[in-house]
Image (tube, rainbow, N blue to C red; front, side):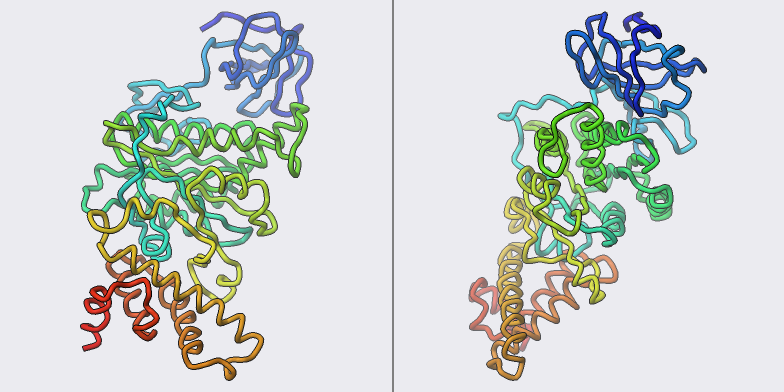
Length: 461
């Protein structure tokens, strides 16, 4: 640690969570600092911007009580670190890695920079294998692959928080003991009652035993919100690449993170880009999302399931737009399905898991899984097209085959997409085969004759 203490004469302004200082010592960008007010209490912070004459310090805690005349800043000579150990599972932290569950401090073994491990791209392992979530629209139709980053695009008031909790409680690896799997659950900018709901749901289900929770409240500072996913992903990297676990990171809500990024950028006086967001938002999000994956020769992996709410349900908004470029697909929630009482309201046609082929089929799930998912998708797409035609000419004006597709589409949404309890992949596949029996065999172009004979004709008999 450096002994440098900035006195009042060097602090020129305090604006919200930001301190502006004259630069009289050699410091680095993102260097950790401690800020002391008149009460003598140390507040955590970091160097957010600097030039030859001025530097800006982001204070990660409340700046109440700080003044120009009584504030001192200590520079620590290194970036922010997070100290971790084997007993991190089952613990609850705030947005900057401080224990808030009433238990003892973490017995730390190693300390890691929160900006992530440097991974040689040539040493990245190809994502593979299957994580079962208990949600049919994911497991059967848009499978989550270990090492993937697959976002959920939601909207204001949609049940994405419920989905996040259910995935955190139910997600597991098939054919492998629970000791090799862990969850890192991250609430970003959530109200206090929502944070308590997350906490109670994980504790009551017993899932907290293999989960690490990070809860950043809406009342916390925007600067702290920017660090919450970084602390959480540091814990996930420790579990994945030190303890060799398979880790699923659930981040909700990344829109709150981006709003904080815009707020802090504006406070720095930076030139805004689309809709007021900083021009570097793409690279900033990529620095978070690209921490997913695996390393060759390492048994562990890190999978991300980020959740974001699309402002005004606009999928072309900068937040979902940039997220879609970085990640490997998207799961889209639909307000119309929700109005019709379909839960989870996952709209399958715009949803996509680009790495599904790498974690399903023979050796992973079931040899017939990819073909079944493809056939269900094709049939449902045809049913949606027929609905548009029926809205013009009426159901009575449709040929018999199109009316069969209309019935299939309704049953698909109400029986397969809609679910009241968790389903195994085998249960989801059985339901899929059952739905396909509503269609003529001549329409099942995505299935082989052997698959039709095995799963459809024999069962008919």
